[in-house]
Image (tube, rainbow, N blue to C red; front, side, top):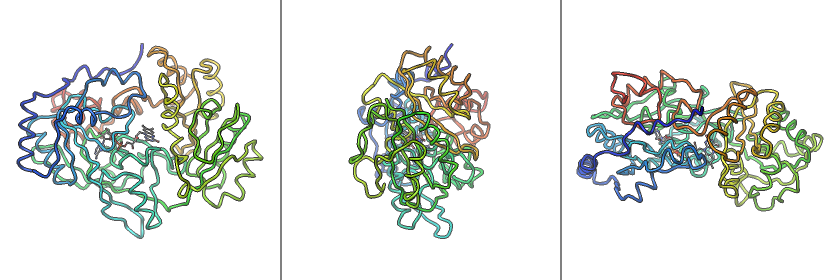
Length: 472
Ligand code: FAD
């Protein structure tokens, strides 16, 4: 028995065209400066993300398309769209840059997609604390560049740093570059406040403190429209990219386990086994790996440079390439890590997919157990993270696709061997996370989206509630 969600079957794929036309006419009249489009190609384009890494999600989400797209550039326009959707009872799905992997911004019930990339101003950077307030559609790279002018930086960023928005990262992402120092986005202390527009006939503009903001963090835009976020930042460091080759996997794994416990300041650590490394597009100047060479990718502070290469050599590795992240041209090393590894691998092998695991400690028995059972059908790349204050190894193994039953068998094997799974082949917030309904997320939806119009079908806890305006 597989566990993959088929919840889309419960939702009508579209709204009556006359209702959409009336909503659009109302918005064109009240906000002539708001850019709207009902062009089918534009609606289809802005209803897609990167869920095609999952052969389970592709058929599930096929044909689910917006009927109208609105491009907001101001909070006032966001309120206008939210109010119009509430008055006409039309589903509303929010979109940052559309780089999510679980179909988070695919509108399951048609209606309106509200694109927020035009809402992108940095509002305030507190010089003493480094606390930043920024509009939700700001691209992470643009934000980081503005922070750098004051010696500050984002603590966490997905490997899609150059293309993703801060609002989309908060609502749909979890961590990535920086997670080995700073943990994950939902860890207390990252998100300090939110500005939120509610979906009601007369939408409210709310300023939420850190506690009230928490239920909207990683809720796939199901329980409020984020118009601005307030986040903690960290000191900017001129990260050095290092690529290290290992002939023996055991030594490479031991180095990856030991490095987070040293005093070297690292912002990312990714370990790829040889077949994966062989298929990566290495940055200009970095030699391709030799036969059977495993590779460790590091972002290290400049003060590591005199000692770290010797440490690595003593642990069986040899430095193949090093370049400053700020100064090197072409592909940054960060775009070989996290789900970018999957992206590049699938460029060669489109019939492969992936999983997301937190490995048990020690990691080797689980990795060896899975290798014995799955052989070359499962290939490893590991990422260092801090989980609940402990240094751990997460991984996004690559998997040859052989159907849902085999995928379920692998998931069962991973769990049996002690790994914790974050399933990327499901569409709800809960199924992709801890598997349980978060009552605070559901309560926030009741408070800020009482008619259940935001991103229908993505919050499993909402339809489970009877008699409160939720769809059943
Ligand atoms: P979108 O995909 O547009 O939206 C994501 C979710 O947020 C949707 O549910 C949407 O409705 C909601 N949303 C968007 N804006 C708002 C708003 N203003 N208010 C409320 N809800 C909103 N993720 C990681 O966490 N770490 C990684 O390292 C990582 N690497 C990736 C690598 C590749 C190659 C790819 C394709 C994806 C990767 N991702 C990763 C997933 C994704 O890129 C990130 O989560 C990214 O931050 C999403 O931002 P976005 O602007 O594209 O959001």
